[in-house]
Image 1 (tube, rainbow, N blue to C red):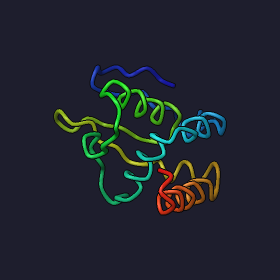
Image 2 (tube, rainbow, N blue to C red):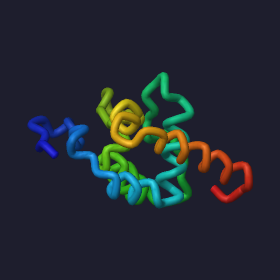
Image 3 (cartoon, rainbow, N blue to C red):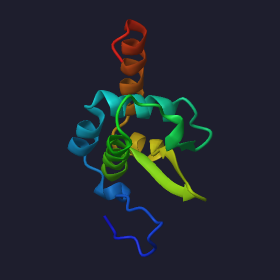
Image 4 (cartoon, one colour):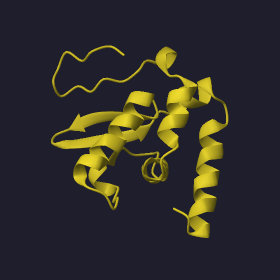
Length: 116
């Protein structure tokens, strides 16, 4: 992962650096699945971290977003003071066709069952 040159620039893996085991690890946590579901629900726009309400400490929320970014699931950029998020759908679909759609369907099914 290239090191950012600007302190407000966040490090992201290139498409070639995204590994399946890292993506699966990132998606294995229920809180991170909630984040992905929220961001995927509004793929036309960037979603601020503050929109995703998790029942954990702020430092834990920050950790979950970092894991998703460093695994290649999310793209994060600063817009003013807000950290904005979007799914890296194009990269994930190119590398692992159908994975993201399958995970999102499963997350929606779990939410209907009251698991998430």
